[in-house]
Length: 106
Image (cartoon, rainbow, N blue to C red; front, side, top):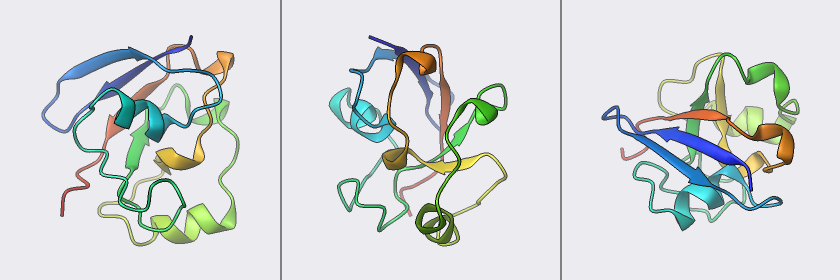
């Protein structure tokens, strides 16, 4: 299983293995990563799974679609590397991915 590193807003690193086919959000929820609220359960309807993808990884992800881009406009402190983790599917190619969890508890 690919290893994903989640860095929570307080700076704590969590290295977890996430099953292929799950979303980055599901990996966080299944491993009790704080900060990924996921109020809509992964339907791309709330932006509470907003995170910042480490710059070394942004070009390795599939491009976001219009719905994700629109929903990110509602996210707190959107940045160029902002993504909704519910929209990123885990693959072998994402082994080592670093995700900086945004402050989603607002």
